[in-house]
Amino acid sequence: MGAGRDEVYCHGKIVTLKHSVIGVVLCVLAGCTSQPETVDAIEEIRIIKRPDFSGSWEMDYRLSDEADEKIRWQYMEALAAEERARQSEDSRYRSAALDHLRSGNLSQGIVAIGRFTEEISRADVLTIRQDPERITIEREDDYALTCEFSLAPQIDSPFGQERCVWYGDQLIFDLKLPEGLNVRHTLSRGVDRVNLATSVYYDRIPFTLNRIYTPFVPGDEQYDCEFKVATLKTCTLGAPE
Image (cartoon, rainbow, N blue to C red; front, side):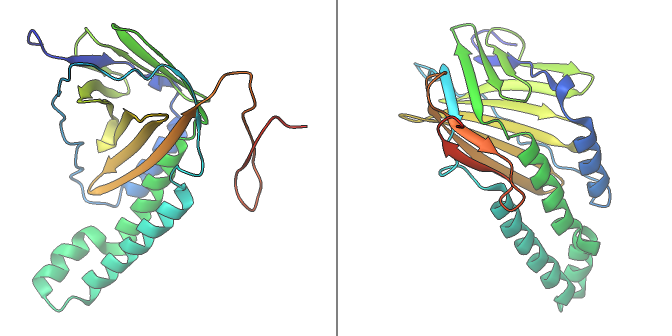
């Protein structure tokens, strides 16, 4: 790494990733085109003062993306694209398009990628510790994202390649998993909130969920969440009675 570069080293504890989920996703996507796209490389952009993400943050469900709704919308868009390809009057276009869209590859891929993205972005609470040397983002019921700002920008692990970089006032974590599955977490800061956008990419099938978090004091009233069959998850403010 050249002197003066502001790239950072990231090490997520990906050993705790749910391997069965990854396996299901790759199985569904096995019928897709054999040349998976990679996440676009991000070059660091330095700013005078980095944002401070420190604190305890809880998800604001009203402002965050709703996974089922977004998956449904992109699934319908994919079905429409597959239908347009089948009905195309241009045989050359139809052949090329159906090579990628045949047998519902795109629509099935959207569902698989969307569910995987939902699975790795469920954390209701973030606990962030940051100092001039490093940042640790503890995510409830998930692996932590950790960056050492002064070390090498990228490492190889048994699970894939990990990298972290400052992109202006955003902190970006990239993880390249086997078989071309790529994950990007983008952390940004607002006046009274942080946004953690989780993006998953595979073979021209991108999917992103934006999760908005607002500050809270641990021990005070928090969101009490429970799973219900009809709504999958229902949250109310305040501790359970």
